[in-house]
Image (cartoon, rainbow, N blue to C red; front, side, top):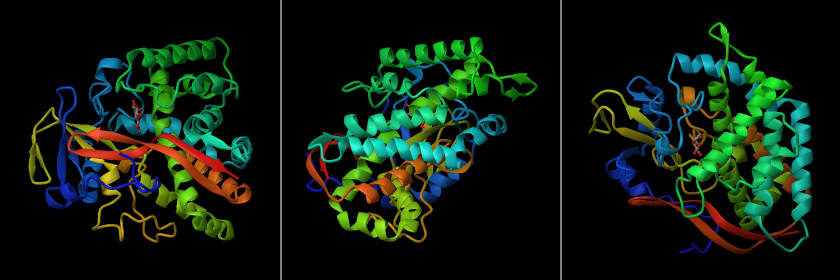
Length: 386
Ligand code: EMZ
């Protein structure tokens, strides 16, 4: 059932977080102990020796993608010290959103996206705003032709999941085939795109191979897709319901950076991410056996009452905000610079162009994690923007 206020995202983890600090999530015969406290989440993220990312490809994702994926996502499914070597190759490329030229192009894209929905009556925000915005912005991150975004838009909001199916192998194969073809294209015809740059990267005295390049690309396509779409859509729901907040940011544009961090804390577009336990250990005063899975619940940690004052309130000027919306420790989100720039630019453009946003209709997207049902975004959000 829908909440009355679309921009309210309740915290389903509160009680379990306060009482025992963890919960259990069943997933394809490979249960997950989900860690809920900020302290435990950060500590566990830091300890790559006991809680590894470099397990069977797909296993640290919940629901597990082991059945639909063989390629290791890089650097996401690699542990230190190898992780650091891969990360060093891609880091500078993923920081390009800090460059003025990149920001100019992104701003032009987002201005166009807002113009397309302004004074046009009722608009379904996910399919007609957030998805195209995400896909077009991705052409900047990959440095590929703008027209490629039409293909990506046709894939829908998640590349591995579809409506009614939490794992969709056919859909995943469309992405893999596309990336394989693009890698072959870049080998024959190198350019200045991410594929070509990766194929030409030095790693341990050799070039990255096709499988490694594919691993980086799958991560780039999958990791920043539904997450960015949710962040954009949810932020619009917030400003539609809180017009004063948008006005405040219009008058104080220097606060937009802080506001973005707070929205990412509150919405936590990625609920959690798993690790595989490498040796019998104890987490949260509870035994965790070797070869089982735990997950780090960013969404719960971001509402931890021991860390955040009024955790269930959006306070755009929140002073101390050690949120883990982009993960924590060495695996912190590689796409965060791009995602932050999208949100900052979006808010800036909204303050410049929009005077009124009205929620016409909406349908919430509630994730089902066993005892926890979490609203992560919308299946549908219809706004009228003026
Ligand atoms: C993986 C993951 C990365 C996974 C930071 O998250 O995002 C998920 O959406 C994908 O399904 O494969 O890329």
